Length: 173
Figure 1 (tube, rainbow, N blue to C red):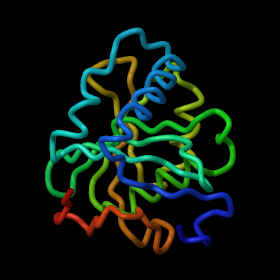
Figure 2 (spheres, one colour; figure 1 turned 135 degrees about the horizontal axis):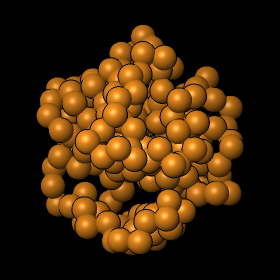
Figure 3 (cartoon, rainbow, N blue to C red; figure 1 turned 180 degrees about the horizontal axis):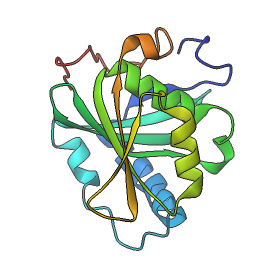
């Protein structure tokens, strides 16, 4: 990862199928924090559908979180989930992971945040480029953020190690 991005940065790594149980355990903790009581039926699809991209977030030699990205169409992405373990928070890891994803996969992005999740709303408002648009969703308790990531708006040279990702529309797995 480019050290100029942040002093305490992270690496984004493709999450191989062998790490699905690790992602599942972190997802369970994430959903518990959010007060969700239903299972996440889409997780297995991240290893079987080409339009879903699972990532591990590493800091130093430890896996400290994950990100789940959906490719809606060429150059259109949804950040379905981003989670950083509590012990790695407030160190710039989440900011690093989010900005690395946005700059490594340039295009239009959307993500939803529950309006009751004040910490999440504060994080995304501070992390997303100023051009991000907040919009209501079909579900009133959710807020949708939409942003077009342009390389000029984001830190230079972030890396998503080992993914082989190229600028959209050439997203491959």
